[in-house]
Image 1 (cartoon, rainbow, N blue to C red):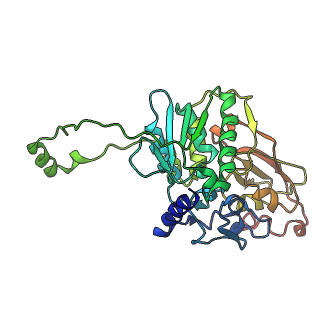
Image 2 (image 1 turned 60 degrees about the vertical axis):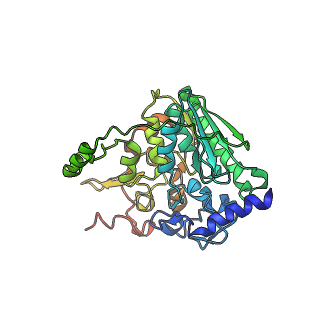
Image 3 (image 1 turned 90 degrees about the vertical axis):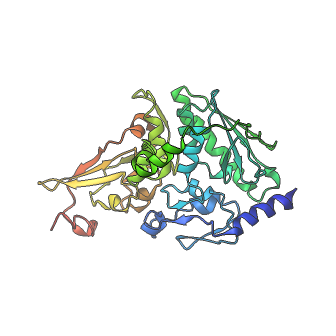
Length: 358
């Protein structure tokens, strides 16, 4: 069994270059190479295909395109061979009337089955499960091959962790989500009788003469809209999910490093405005008023708790909180994090207020 599964996965990986695409402008290690290395992608790679230099370098021969690195990357710098947006749209339409959703990994037989195909369970982040739960999914049936004999077995722990974290976020909202994993073969696609298209010969040629009648109606989806605005897919899924919920102002969930969180600033802050420059998700912003007072703003809906701002702050003035309010994750709004004047001694903040002095 072991050689067969591993050979199948290896063969899929060798058909073409299916290694994740890399967006360097988002990568934490590229944005600030001296702020402490982010190792999220390398730490979860089941085949140890990622080397940090400090930016990630992927060994195409070792990479099996499972998507674990893209699911773990806190800022969406890595994009798997099948995007989360594609899986989201397929899964949303595949849920049955009882709220059951069947997923199958690529190691399962490729014969037509009534499932949504995914690269691997370790490539599904918590945000996807949260979005599915908020859209009516109550039970996820995960069909896999024998994970114990799979080259990607190391990612199974990560897959279970992601699901548990999703359950922890959904619990305060009164939503129960269950997962059942099995190595039994998935059910085949139901046989459907052929259906007449309803398009006559005359109607077909009429449509050719009037192309506008063939246009597909536009689909409105908040996830797609947010992605188009530059929001990474995981965050778009989370915002879309939480905006469907009735959330009490006091409801909060534990901070999940690399996924969601909130910040506090201490009196050690000197208003140098370096943290907004390094923030890869625009969760931090700043402005200077006419009197030279700096206001540091924070938007929890944009924060993925990547920790770059905390590591980059040379005054150690920022810290991630232990919990975050759900209504702040659901609704994008900048709130004042710190306000004050900068120190008179520019040596304490050599890069402060370059823009304000112009």
